[in-house]
Length: 301
Image (cartoon, helix red, strand yellow):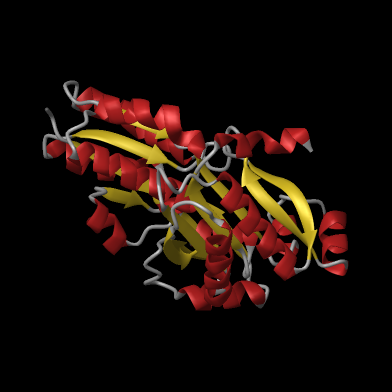
């Protein structure tokens, strides 16, 4: 069976060390501009430290992000193709980023040069740790002898089971990113309202409900994760934080206290810079495998 390389983009929230440990061939960087200086997004935080980044946001730095480019994808894919491998690229949800379209554009150009190779590009309908958990499982399946087609079929069948529940500390950053209206952000600040955010069926961020206070929002996130996570099938849970590690650990304990079956195994890390620019410091994002009904729960509100 022909070997295939698995790629993703930096929205997956994995460091280079984690990428190498799991057997991911490459993580294509997104980009961000901090006070008009361009950086490659990376969970290694080598060009700018994570704390420095989030402190700059707190101080009101001018910030914008941009997607990975087709040239970036082409460069990464070419290396695998020249090594005689096929390519499976699993990108950030197309509902929030154009990265998957850029990967497809790169694949179309390369298919002319490598007509005997397979280059498949998949919209994960996810980002941050749900995407990471999907990538890790895809690598395990490949290493167990599954074909690229079998892994891709599994992703399409299971990707909505990789869920996210999160909460932000301040609505201001979501307002600045165009996620909520100015009035909603103002009243959210006045009344200490914290939105509970999930992904919908196509990977869009949806404010499922609003909770008063930081403790209340963390408790509600823990309740939802405990209710919808299938830790008996996949015990690993990722908690990404925007410079609030101690609260991330507290949230992990809250979840642990509420889960009645198999206890979770945690992976902690900073929210990567692209997502971090929209959600702001103090954000907590929990990724896990579980009931896809969570994605349509907003329709019943």
